[in-house]
Image 1 (cartoon, rainbow, N blue to C red):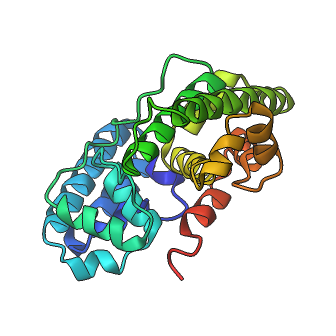
Image 2: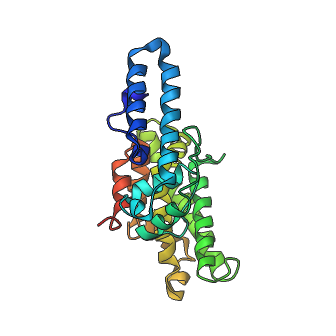
Image 3: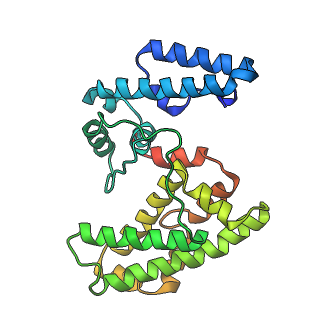
Length: 257
């Protein structure tokens, strides 16, 4: 595993103590050369790297976090099982990361749980949850009119759109929809997927007149097809081919300028 890194993993940006860095690098090098001891060296390397990340992070200042990019701040939070709900600006991520700087990483094995649902059902449910949270943050009741219908329609639109394009992408790439689901729940793909959902939701909740339009399934599907509020089709394609570059570009868009 160590030998396959073309560049240091993202959590290496936290290793300000060079003793940890050089020791991790040495153990990775030894793991690549000595096949008989590969597993032992790899275990020690990863353990020390995670320990170094924790020790260094606890000593980081607010200024240190401000120097980090959005994708690195997201990685910092994700490795600790944290989410920055409602975060829009880089300053929001900096504030939350600094607040939880003493929290230890969950470890390499910790992953976001993949629901026991179909690709489109899982993301439809995500859309409804995000919609209800957005309504609540606006001081309204998601169970009241028209929000209950808007969120239900968004869920149905996402389900329908993801079913159509998810199946097409999976068939074209000779993959299964379940494989698509697992990939979509990995770090950067999931973050971008949620961002696209929130962009669609913010559009639908923008005003009473648009809320009324978003009670129509055909209208919401039309918005998704037209890429007016996020290019869902491109996201599904990149999930299928497992291309992370466009994902990071979306996360960094306008936030690190």
